[in-house]
Amino acid sequence: MKKLFFSIVAVLALTVASNAQTQVVTGPAIAVDKEVHDYGTVAYGGNGACEFKVTNVGTEPLILSKCKGSCGCTVPTCDTTPILPGGSSSIQVKYDTKRAGAINKSVTINSNAVNEPVKVVRIKGTVEADPNAPAPTGTPGGAPVKEQGGAPNN
Image (cartoon, rainbow, N blue to C red; front, side, top):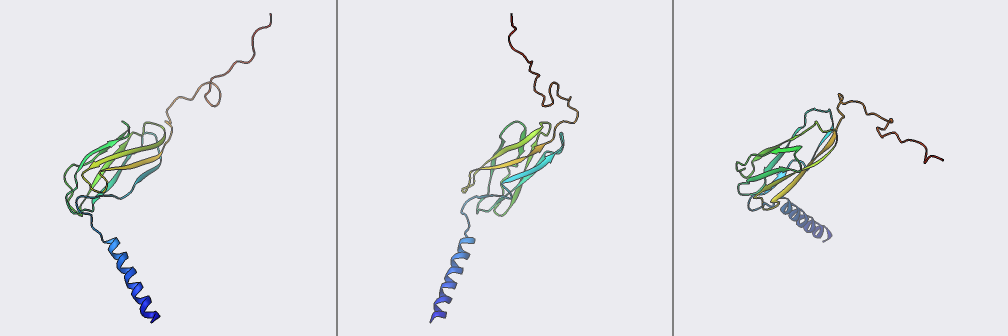
């Protein structure tokens, strides 16, 4: 009797698990291959290009209406041609690597997706300093030299 009970419970658990994984979204639905692209460390003026793969996991055509970077240094390009169910497209992102320092920017993707009409992905990394930049003046940290002393004694 115990074996029969455990067998029924096991079959029910597998049925519930398989139904949860095979649910199809009715309408257009967006999925991306990654939420964040990490450039790591990039040379000043180096390659700042990356891409995000967008897949339509829904049942109707997905239309990317607009892709926008969080600033002028992050320029995404997306194709507005409808993506058929099961099809994919790429969003090309170009970051201006003539800006030394940390990269932490976002790209907003607007679409007709029923699951996420506004999808935000990110880029991150570090751009090395310009090797041709003049050396800083003043103290070793580049801070201005502070004069010692106080008010004159009269």
